[in-house]
Structures are given as structure tokens and as C-alpha cells.
Length: 179
Image (cartoon, rainbow, N blue to C red; front, side, top):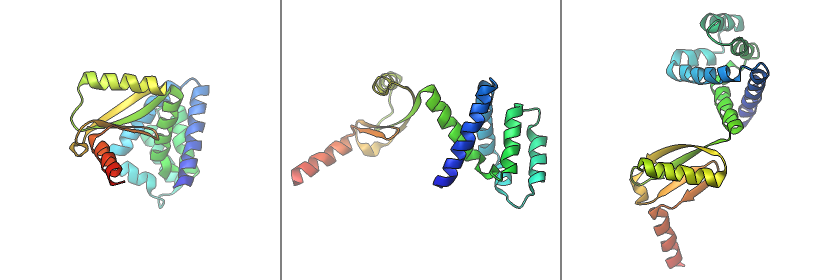
């Protein structure tokens, strides 16, 4: 898996750098989201991209029929290049790599917040502000409720985890008492 991830990042970087050079990054950024949605919503397209029994020229013809004139030329050419290099099965992974690269370039990090109860808008805003101050980056925050943490919340920002949940504090207290 690590090897395909490396390949995906190389292809993603090359595509994004070329789009940036041609001053088409804004449009390609939108097309990346559209393609991700399309692959997610269309099981047939996802299966088509993964099917290695379909000849390359047939795949390129079909992709051209679907996308030519509907996406930027650089995106159309990129899709055809993937087929010619037999990497089209990695398209979903490449698109995700593009998202991560663009987030990094834009200084955006994802934060996952788990709380015992739903957070109010004011609490979310305050937490987001604190996290942005701490990380020095823009935060894209997702929240979810998990009553098993009893109280408080846990936050994951990249590899960092801040856990102020009551369940963890009780567990730490129990370990301290046991010795």
C-alpha cells in the first residue's frame, strides 16, 4: 500500500504543479472535488477504472467520451495518461493525495473532535480558534458525539491527540491508585 501511496503522491504533485504552471489550479481544484464525488457516487465508474481486462485504447476512448469538453484539457490529458501508464485504478487515491497536498499548500489541517454531548456553535468556534492559535494553521473541524467518553472531549489534529475526556481522566486516576 505504501508504494501505491508514493505513486499517487507523485502523480498528484505532477498534475497540480502543471495546473499551477498553466494558471488552471483553481479550475483543477474544483474538478478534483467533482471527480471524487463522481467516483464515490458511481460504482460503475469505480469498477470501470479498476477493471484491468478492458483494453487501454477502449478505456481512453470511453474516458474521452465522458470527459472531453467537460473538464480542463489538463485534467482530460491526465486521465488519459493514467490509463496509458496503467495507473487509472489509483485515481481515487490520487485525488485524495491532491486534496491533502492542496490542504498543506493552503495551510489547512483537519481536526476530529469527539465529545460526550453535541457542542454548541459557540463552543465549536472557540475550540476552532484555540486550535488555529495552537497550530498556526487553518482548521477544518469535524465533530461527532460519543457518550462513552462520559464527559469532556478528545481532539485529533494530524498526529496530535488532546484527550480531556472524563473516561481517560478516570482511567488515569485508577492507574495512579493501583500503583
